[in-house]
Length: 512
Image (cartoon, rainbow, N blue to C red; front, side):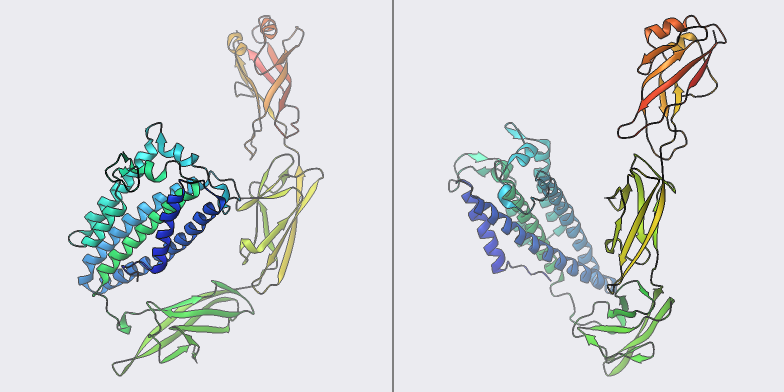
């Protein structure tokens, strides 16, 4: 449970932070930037530990509230405090993430290059006033402070005083040591012109203040209320397998624990599947026995405790699955059972019973893409995908599959998005657009028409560049008679990186 006092280590971190802020007025050295980064790392780690302890305190209070009505009011207040703290902490975390997005990939841990103030200068400030993002930051601080004080209710004056002090957004003396001198807005004073790593460290420290104040509030709510011991009747036995399924021939490994277990809660006797278990560590019953045959298996038994001289038993019952060792991989194309040349074909490759991070995949033209793969085949008629999985015991299994490589189908010529039974007046046809599409094809590809040949019966063919009839073609169109079938032939289309086949011709009947 988090206490109300700061540890000597935390005080040292706070003091070092103030010292480095003062040094910003001098020439900023690479060593100082690195020192800021190391401080930020330390405070961030402390924040993670604080958050874990706070969550444990909240869970303990919620559990007591479910058992005793007198804890319900405190649990409700604790939930409010936790929600307010989480919301503000997440908001700061999002700003830090966007702040680090301005750093080149791979440079996040190199604090010597994080010396530019440009990102927050642009985000928080516009000329001589705050930007909308800057105004929102100040507003979020003020809302956090106000909402926390409202949620605390009556009392808790030391915590409210700390909130008012650490989240005060009023103007700050521009000159240190001169409180009566000119004032400077809070955001300008703390963030304008500072190196990126200094601003990130400041925000991490602000998150630390949020979690420390939450810890103090939870400590106040819990102080004097929680009991040191609880009847075993309120415990539940929990079986925690090492994994959710096991291969045939493996040994089952896992743990049986009690909800809210601790070192002082040790059963007098443990019986699992008819056998006595003696391996008990820190309140946890350690299990290690053959997993059994393939199929669903049951763990059943009981934990025995002595309470007030009387032996009481808590039943243990759980299930787990035993699956065969995999000997083949599942390799499939997401959209088809072949792969097409010149385009990226989405692929899913997996091994049953083996996590994706323990599977390696190879193949000509294959590359990783998010959680799956992309196959862009080159020359040849087939391509082979090979998958190798590593079992938990270190053994490797491998499988492969061959895919046919096909060229893209022939695009269909279109006039005004139609390709058959087209009838138009001369005027409408003169302004129509010629295009090409892959009909009934799973890939979303749109070729761009570059030229075509326009034919009117009894007239010379007219070559046209682009997607609409040229002036010359329009003149020839005027000579067409009602009922004539004019033709858009030799349509050429292009698609970057793809060899597009010739486009099919389109015929249009003249209706006037």
